[in-house]
Every structure is written in C-alpha cells, then in structure tokens.
Length: 301
Ligand code: NDP
Image (cartoon, rainbow, N blue to C red):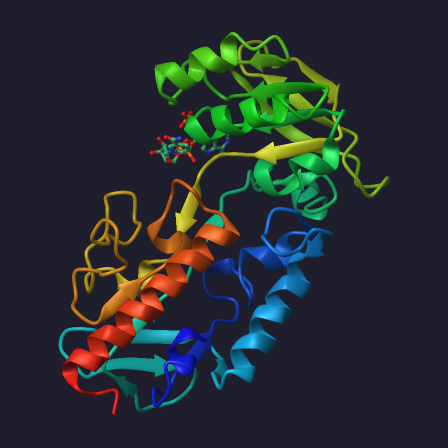
C-alpha cells in the first residue's frame, strides 16, 4: 500500500497458500478477537482485520496474487521469484520478505481441535478473553515466563507446565515467575490431552508427571502454548543471512537484509515483539526503504 501510494511504482503482493503449514493471511487468521490493534476500540476478528488490510491495499492499487512462491534467486538483480506453477520467474529489482513465523504446538489432536476455543499461542492477543479464570501456560523459555507473568495480571491463577526440571529462561524472568503467588509451577510434567473436545472448549489439561507417570487433570479455561516459533525463512536460506535461530538478519533500525534491495519485515525477522502492530510498522519501514532504494536506482520512473 505504501509503495502504491508512492506513485509510479508497480507493487504486487504474493500471498502464500499453505506453505509451511501457514494460512493465507497469516497467523491473525487463526486469532478470533483482536483487542490490541490501534483504531479498533471495539474488538475486531483477526479475519476481518486481514480483510480490511487487503481491501485497503487493493484500493491503493496493489495487485494481489494468491499463490505460493516456490523458489527465489536473490544472487543478483534483477531478482527472480518463481510464483505458483509459472515456469518462468517474475523479475524484480526489490523484494520485501514478509513470510512471518508460525507458533509451535505440542501436536496433540485435542489441542488442534480446541485452537481458538481456549488453546492459544499468544497471551497478549487472547489473555483478556479469560480474565478472572484459571489458565495454563506450557513451556520453559523466556516466552513462557513472560506469558505467565502477563496472564497473572489478568487471570485468577496460572499453572506453568514445563517438561524438565530446569528452565531455559533467563534467571531474572524465572525469578519473577517463581516469586509470583498467582503462578503455580509444575516441573517435569507434560500435557497429554486438552479437555474437552466434546464440550468444544477448554475445560482442563491432563498432565503426566514424568518422574512417576502419574496423570491428573488440572481445570483451566485456556492453555497458552509457549514452546517457541518457527520463522518461515526456509525459502531464503543460503540467499540472505539468517540468525542461528533461523530468523532473517536485518541491519538494526532498518529492514535491510544482507542483500541490497531485499528487505524483511514482520515476524520473519522479529522474535521479540511479534505483535500485529509491530509487524505492520516494520512493513511500512520496508516499503519506504524499498521505495528509496528503487528511487536511488532510478527504477521508480
Ligand atoms: P525457547 O526455544 O527459548 O523455549 C522453548 C521452551 O519450550 C523450552 O523450555 C522447551 O523445553 C519447551 N518446548 C519445546 N518443545 C516442546 C514440546 N514439544 N513440549 C513441551 N515443551 C517444549 O523459545 P521462546 O519462545 O521462549 O524464546 C525464543 C527466543 O526469544 C529466546 O532467545 C528468548 O530468550 C527470546 N525471548 C526474549 C524475551 C525477552 O527478552 N523479553 C521474551 C521472549 C522471548 P526444553 O527447555 O526442555 O527444551
């Protein structure tokens, strides 16, 4: 949209299908209510928010192609992007990568059936829906600590379930959780089932103590899975520099990747904030940087 509004630039958005087990429209398509996107004092569904983004971009003249990008060659300009079944690549002088990240889940059938019905991977997005109710967080990293701490401010109780005795999280974040009277920590426990598929919403989690194999059900209204995210950067591996955790490297304070003319925005380059509004903000930055890059090349006119 920013690129189209800049005038005389031809902007095309390649919108993926199911590559990397994602969904057209991205992670927001899995979120029911979005309460923290500016400009929506009444909550908006993730689906409606994405539709509005799409309508606005199209109104500004963006051509939207719904197809997976199957291959890219960023070794030299013009860059080559293979789209869908097309044998010939699309040639372009600048690429903005906004492929996002997907939340990791435990892989339980009951978990999958109850997504958006109490199973979530984003406390900031969905926590307020369970205000005053008991909830659980699964994981032992910084995200799990952060989510548990955040939820303790909203929910009646938080049970943090971690599969080992030692946490991966930083000492400072662990200490904050351990000192919080609203958070109960269950170490060396794994979730075996999310209850209750028959009721069609979360009523509890069945956990197993890994030391004695005893199982019990903890009544909760929601389970927040915080066991990491996977950036959708596979397509670009070996072409732009990646961090060791797979996220695309950008020059701090910019969206510039290791390849001039190739920019990255949103969750594929951000494992810290991961919010719709920060992704939109870096998207704007990428568009402005791309426009300036093309302007400097003289390609904008
Ligand atoms: P991490 O990879 O650090 O931690 C994932 C946690 O999930 C681990 O404790 C892991 O257990 C557990 N886990 C993974 N798979 C499973 C599974 N199948 N079943 C049960 N448990 C599982 O991911 P985070 O999202 O926590 O953090 C990602 C990065 O972001 C880190 O570098 C972190 O420091 C950073 N971060 C920083 C923040 C900040 O500074 N404010 C806030 C949030 C994140 P195990 O330990 O046994 O492997």
